[in-house]
Image (cartoon, rainbow, N blue to C red):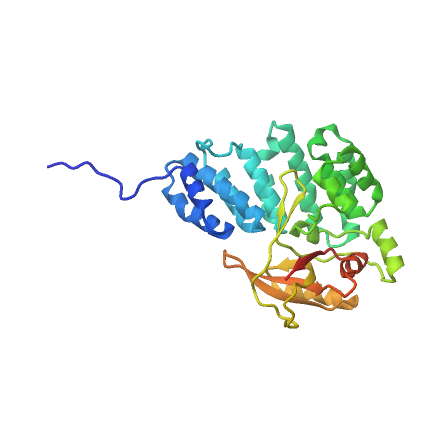
Length: 346
């Protein structure tokens, strides 16, 4: 007697797996569910779309290393877009992988992706991102402000180039951040008033806490010098390299969601039930790097310390912070001293 073979489990479409994932209680659970379900996806197109979708979730939650890996896996599958899932080209996925690698300071991986077929793309926007991210990779390698001079010169050319118009706001933001010169911020506000980059310059959006910006040396801005003079703090050039758990925007600049930690801190609570605030300066996988930043902060007179946070991926991060002071000016003092930071409640 002949029996037709039947699968032991039903294969699922990307659309169905995504729908199930979105019903989970947390983003971490959604991410874990998608990764565990990809092997049951019905086709290569479904697997590609799921890797791409889970990468966007990982990026939004600050899991940049994991997001880069997921984007790369999606780009490595030769298939189209699954039914009901976002439509995206392989070249765009590679660019997304580059951005996430840069966001966690992994310029070597970013450069390996940039040296793929995207360099010969016929898409002007893709090529603009390749050029921008190549400069960002060079900036990650710089050990001090002097070593950024070549990149700054290139960015100044890009700021005037019609071929770079799709990423011009990100170019101007980078120049404003690296050089500390207000002219680039003023150009952003004038020509691109509704862009996320202009929002950063105006102080309406806090997105510079993405790891990439901590790896880049920068000159103290004109505004910070003014703040330093008025507050009596000494200003300096920031050369620290750290990372922080925020999201990144697709336009080439970095995103703005921060992640709250449930882990215990190395500094004991003072027993108050009211929410407190501390300025977060960086997040590291390597404790030695966190200690270096803490040492630099203490040398400038700040009482810095770190606490640990373990992500769903199992990776433990060391988060460097300074407690807010009574008059709420600690963030201003840190920035005037050349350190980037943002407030986090706990």
